[in-house]
Image 1 (cartoon, rainbow, N blue to C red):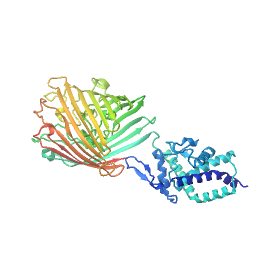
Image 2 (cartoon, helix red, strand yellow; image 1 turned 45 degrees about the vertical axis):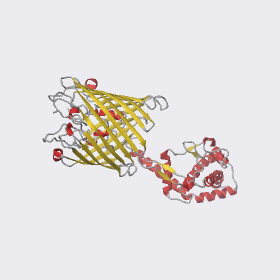
Image 3 (cartoon, rainbow, N blue to C red; image 1 turned 60 degrees about the horizontal axis):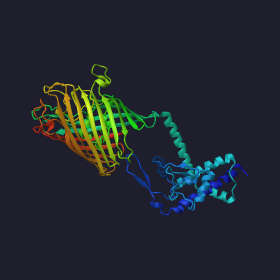
Image 4 (cartoon, one colour; image 1 turned 135 degrees about the vertical axis):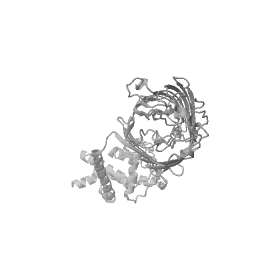
Length: 576
């Protein structure tokens, strides 16, 4: 007998077993057309795919079922039929399964220990299983442990080989193609540990109302960030982010034509652009790693409290990227997280595991210094400007999150809410000049310490509704006379995710930007500067979104005598 006939005879038992399995799934699943296989993609709606009829032979089926490996549905070999949680000894096909597992070892299950015997399969799936059995039988041939079979088995084998020859050839071709592409990627890969995450923002914006509208023009601004995210262990991440932008905020004017010292209405893509001339710089260099039960955050440059502390403002906050959340810096996060920044260390320590009295509580502590790199007098990591944060977090499932925050800061740079990274003395990101200026009535900046207290909450009553808000109080003490003051801020936002389309967000936010009353040298401006904002993020594709929105500011500079300002923006965000 020839070698080819010998191999054919040896292969027959495995093929007959595979044939029995096909019959099992086909007969045991009479309602298979109602079965669905969910496939989830990042940021994409869940898509239900019905199993196709066995007669279909299009290459699209191979593509669909190859995606199952990306959804934790990849199969794994088993050594005993008892490993399947959904296969019982009373099942009519139990003996066939047991024989294939124990004799040939070519049956695969899913990671959740199921076999899914009632699920209909396609010709391509059957061909893949048949190919696995053929590979296993080849091993048996090499060890000469297989048994001979009858001529009837050989005839069955020949029919099956002819029937599935096209599918087997397609699978082998796909494997060869994948091997070639993998070899090319490995030869030309950028890094085995680093991935590039990019974001580009185009913003067309204008402001209307009184002297402010007359003294500003329509602008087309941009900001680009390229984040190299490196992981050395699979659990840590090193952020090395390059940034460039030319976006600056509008200057607001009072009724006398004078510029108002305020950051009201500043938008997220207008924050942290340095000189604003598209010069490239490293605006974030941080490392995050789990150490025991705690998560440790280390910042060498560009550190922010909102990088490591829970902000509790979903759909408005965008992790300081500013391309997908609220339009304004004020609506993005509580101003308490913009006190200080730079270089330092923080940790987040869980206090419970969900079942105890502490629930899902955790404690967060961090220290950031904005002049940590400067060895000069009254500078450095501990003797210059700094902000130390402590926060207690509590959550109930995934519906309710609460946080109580305390920040102690010291600054001689002249501004309270400066995020510690703008590099300009007196520059700040949110609020009025009265709430930010660290100095006396004569306009002279003085070193000041601050104690800030804040609470934040986020409530998601349903998957289509999110409500979040915050309140913050700031007590500032200067080293001179008449430079002590208090400031307040609060806001409330309502977001409707997936409004009109999966991935879209409709957001409405209202509140009072940081303000301070009765400060000498500010003309007795004691009106609350209210901020109203609405935006609609429309997701064009997985990587492109367009966000039109409006910001309405009342009593700019804390004076109702100044005309309201209305800012209109069309923001387009590209991510890659």
